[in-house]
Amino acid sequence: FSGNTENAPVKYTITSVTDQWGCPAQNISGEGEILAVRAPVASAGSDSDVCGMDGTLSAVLEFGTGLWSGPAGVNFADATDPLTAITAAAQGSYLLTWTSSNGVCIDDTDETTLNFWDAPSAANIIPRNDTTLAAFRSEIDLQAELIGPLVGQLEWSSPGDAIFNPPDGQFTRATGLNWGENKIILSVINGTCPAETYEIKVTVLEDLKIPKGISPRTSIGQNDYFKIENIENIDNELT
Image (cartoon, rainbow, N blue to C red; front, side, top):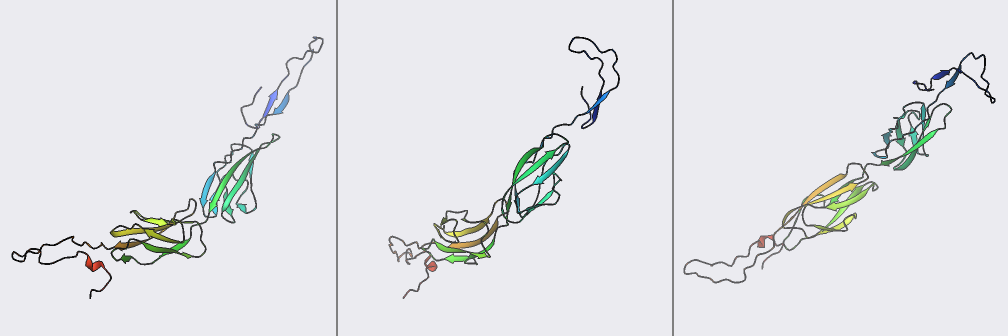
């Protein structure tokens, strides 16, 4: 026999009884009742990352009841709600358990991990303003000025050819800057939170272009002057 309604009583009637010697019962009456209970299946949902200390769970409850449990440091708005809100006390990974129950059946459990991330730190780049480097210079020392304790990781980058040593330090040196404008980017990265990014521009003036030779032809007005291109980019005085 079977029932088509979950946790509903199923009635049955005995139509014949035969004893061990093969003798049938002569008088059978009445009916019985069995309560059929479906075994629970727990589904806690997929592992996920949360930016901030507030998240939402995603368990599945098709029948019966459920209950969330977890380590110290997490708080469930409603531990019996499969889609409850959850709050963490601090950044970290928390293993959570969803227990599904249904009547006299054995409970079923499933686990999910939530990773909570703090928003990354705020910072400034030193030098704070756009900077110009004189000719024959292609490197600059940089500093990430943190506003409060560091939360996350630092990352220096540039769309050009600049190389940062180290690329993740609070103090770094950018080398290999190109002539012209170079964009310097400082990113503070932490988990799945949006990165905090800061930019300055470093302009490198072109080096001198000194002719290898000159042949004046004053009679026809050619090569009357010895011209050194970009000499104005040199921070010096001629005497």
